[in-house]
Image (cartoon, rainbow, N blue to C red; front, side):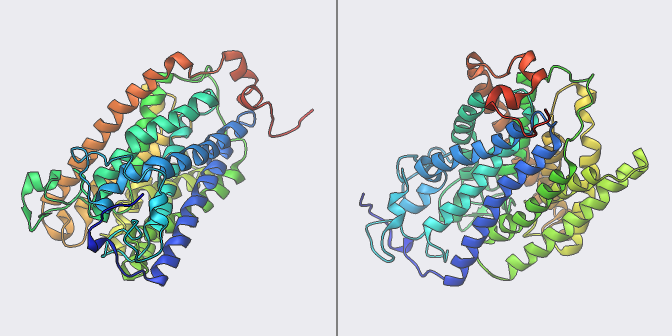
Length: 448
């Protein structure tokens, strides 16, 4: 396919930036198997394989659809110069299959580079963004442990990534490649509508460095909707669901933390000082979140648990994700300790309100993601309410968080209801005997 592209599409590739982004993409890809260990350890022994397969299934389906049409829906307008659809998503057919990204550097018959201002090939940017789509979908599975048909889950991953994730990633990140997006910092976005724009950019731009709205609020809200529509496990409220392998949980948390450096620092899209700041902020917030979570456990339960420490790691990583490029290290410590404490308190909401968020996706990802997205409006250096004395940034952050909640909530509800005729839940007998045996004809441990 030959595309007529503006001259500014072609630019210089920086080998150092490209090498770093390939490494970062590999780190983020590792997060999904890490999540499989984290979730698998939290599940019961008769459900661990299914729990891990939900992550690996997402890795399979979402990777395929991202190469075919996901990248095009997210970013093709900025690369090809075509218009997007009302600032919501780009043309899924403009770069369908992504073959157009593989031509020889510098030629004018393909979209070799993203923009002149970005120093990595578009195909590398695609690989990096693909890993984000995969982990976001996989995160949702933690709310559905032990009761959902694997075939229905796989169909859901394709529909949800297409209808919810790709449009939201375009709305927030489309401007990275010179495209549009109503939640971005362009003159057509929310922020410019509220507070005006100068020279084509919003005077107060939304901050979502690595995916507070796109990844964590998105996945957390979808998890809440599915937990409510699909319903609880048969023994919810009467059965003590204990993690079957806490070392798996700790291993998964370690792999997630390691991979998250690619997730956050890689989102700078260059090997520079900001990437270094992001690395430090990610570490600081995560460490502080462990302390925040364990402090709640000690005060409330008189024990500091290893599952709590692992969950605190995830809560801190979630909260710092949107804020990591805008905070100082001290601001990151403040954000992280509050995130850990809030998430530790929030996991009890499922018992109070009666929804079976099996592995606390809502309590950790939605709550910590909301706090990180709004907290950056309070703590961001120079522009935050507490650090810079301006209320506008926190207002913008609240608006984009609220929009993500509504957008994801409504569309996920429609998808979940549309799949009901296929059947979401396995039978109570299969659930009692174990979903691993029922859905996969396997067991993790041979106990006979």
